[in-house]
Image 1 (cartoon, helix red, strand yellow):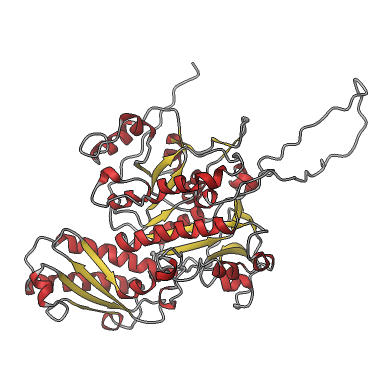
Image 2 (image 1 turned 60 degrees about the vertical axis):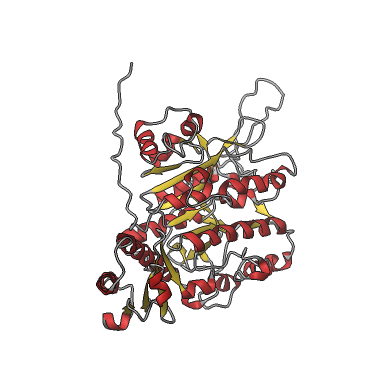
Amino acid sequence: MNGVSFELAPPRVAADANRVDVACFVGYVGRRATALPANVRTALAETRWIAGPWARPPAEVEALLQLPVVVDSWNAFDALFAWDSRPIGRGERRCASYLGAAVRSFFANGGRRALIVRCGDPWPYLEVVGNRAAQRTTRLAALLASAANPMDPASWIGIGHLSGLPEVSLLCLPDLADICAADPALVDVAVEPPSSPEVFVDCSSNAVVGVEQDVGLRDLAPPRADHDGFIAWRNAIGTARERLARLHREMLLLAALPLPMQDARNADAWAQADFHAYLENAGVLIEPDSSNGGRAAASAFVQLAWPWLRTSHSTDLPGALEAPDGLLAGVLAINALSRGTFRSVAGSRLAAVSGSEPLLAWSGIAETPSDRLAQRVCVIAPSPVGWALHSDVTASADEAWRAGGVSRLMGALLRAARRAGEAALFEASGPLLWQRIERSLGHLLTAFWREGALGGASPEEAFSVRCDRSTMSQNDLDNGRLRAEVSILPVAAVERISVVLDLTGGGAAEALTNALREVA
């Protein structure tokens, strides 16, 4: 026996619905063959996943299958999930899972707290030809939870769990690009010659001894989407966006754009490095409307990231490339904790990044395709001082909602307003309650103004709050509905934004945002 080592379990941190740095990762990752830690089992029991009306079978609890698990460090995640054991094919080779890589980047770039929803084991990276497309619908269904009822926890899978996770502010679906990709392939890898000089050595025979070259995972092509795959990815993002817009307006979806195949439809635009043109032609950057079934990705609820990155950790992924969504989530999380979520992260230096696919040219004068793309996508590119995040934007076409900080500010305000409304949910509606709501919202907005989130030389210029008979009809009063109208001037917005906060008697506090309704 060489000795005994002890590792202290980190203390449990109580959920705080006002936090704006917590990320939720939903996707496919293996479970380690270890016993379920007592603290995880206790947390699942307290949230009634082990006993109660929506208890899951013991095997699913042990496997952490379709259950929300809180991790407050990379070590806690690593102890529970076999993120580094995704099979490549029939042999013994393994690679990292994309969910594991995203969580790793999240914590490496400043993230402090994440929730993991494991939808199942990852499939072999090299599958039988055609199997990826054949399994796409099934794999997406486990993530997107189209049948999940927000009032019935027994139905929650995938992103349906967000209905019970009020502390989440950032949502990542790291496996989407892989699910929607075409069949991956092996590629030829050039191996650099040895740097040592040639010398003569004694040979035991005249036979030529073969030397196996270690190319890591560079001989695996990263996941690339053809045109049909891009449409499937766009529709999946649109489905998730629609759920956030309908049920979780204070949450933000972070998504990595897929790598396109060079022979995809509209390949001329891609060959010219004008990815922005391809995304418009594919309907990714158009606003959802009745003609596309609301399935487009463009929205103030979505921040897209591009391109795929070579980092200090990405060598265990196919092609040694990782998607940028986990990194972006970490940058946004530490920004929320250290500077305020409403402040832009554009210009953040990314020391772990060493390359990208493709390598983008950046001018900052809105002339190159990369500059045009950066108006709707969070673009990572080299700069004179190293790799940096050059833009912090949402995918919205509405300039008032384009700045990423504005959308995150609204999420923080809606989150705080929801908490204030829920505290008054069962009180009698009348002038006393209306005045208290006005004061509560006024104090909240004054605090944001003092922190620099709102423009204006005074609180009166920065915002206004009304909650009286002018904001409610007789029908509202008869049906137990309280409505407060808030108008704010975000410091980065091009116009004033008006919000209607609606507190109904049905047990739910809703925030109805006029401008969001237009761009949702």
